[in-house]
Amino acid sequence: MDSVIVSGKAFDGRSFREDVEVRVERGEIERVGRSNGEKSLSGDYVILPGLIDAHVHFFGVKEDRLLEWNLVPETLATARSVGDAIRLLSAGFTTVRDLGSKCALGLAEAIEEGRLLGPRIVASGYSIAETGGNDDPRDLPLEMGQSISYSFYCDSPWECRKAVRKCVRQGADVIKVYASGAFSSGGKIKPAFTLEELRAIVDEAHRADLKVAMHAYGEEAIGNALDAGADTIEHGLGLSESLAKEMARKGICYVPTLATYEVGLEVRKMNEEVRKARSELIRKHMEEDVKIARDNGVTIIAGTDYVGSSSRRHGENYREIVLLAKFLGLEGALRAASFDAALCLGLRGGSLEVGKWGDLALFKKVEDPSDLRPDNLEYIVIRGRAINGPQLRELARWVQY
Ligand SMILES: [Zn+2]
Image (cartoon, rainbow, N blue to C red):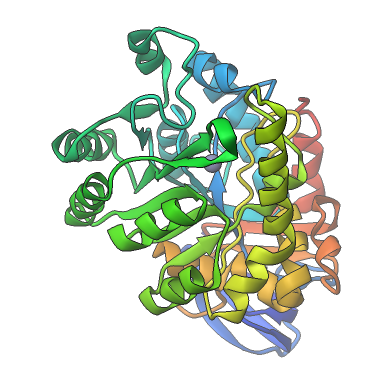
């Protein structure tokens, strides 16, 4: 494999530096140092570590509806996701974490084998949920719901341990748990699972050396997730100052997935009261929660919760960086999608350091978060192989939603 030599302004995962040379050999970063102007990829560009989206789903759906997420045939979802994988790469994302879908593990393996073009995928396989919990298509009889779900339902600590073992059996890289549901009547969020069940899940996952990502809406569910020892809090709407302090103290990372709330999705029928409570919770999340997390020293990481539907398209994942930059600034938001994300997820990527993955994203310029639009990508380097950005984009353009 040829070596890749790039030089110019660079974001090293934490901050920008001028005149940096990065050499990638045998799929790894082999040298980072002062530039003497030598480069194997011509042109002017800013060098970034390949971007990371820590929360996606490869649902392969047309419409963003609960029933469709569950009902779409696996072969169709996988086929559609092939296009999404190309789109992600053409947008500068070299690693994504899929937190619940039926096709991500297979997709990840095919990409790893080199039979398919796409980002590295860290996948949970199925997620874990309580019976009747989040994303359970409750309009259907229970057995039917379970048979089409991308979650294993479990109730009781031992069933939950078994659910983790089933995920491990699938080949999971991470365990995803729904520690809360959506809104029930009265606008109150129902926490999912008892603390005992959540602790059993975390213990079983950690025994298998897997991190646990917990979906949590509302103070009670976030509190339970922190008590149970989750590794990342997903969404985390309703964050309070005391919870943020606890999160920081325990080194648990926060994935606020702002990009998904920007879309204004509604997946369930809601009465007026619930709708109001929900929109207030989302307003606070978009305006205050990240500030609370930041001011209390929580590590914040970028995740879109995009699923590959027409409203949440893979390939536009830079939106999360744009939204986070309002609170973290450009460097902070980039760090959330690189260095910090890799640290939280336990990955050998996310920074320009010797020995890290040879994954780079070269953008025309990066002066403002909106410069991370896919049409500014000049080259992507994945596993040490460089691909021309405009050519990849031309390919991605064929993917229609
Ligand atoms: Zn999600």
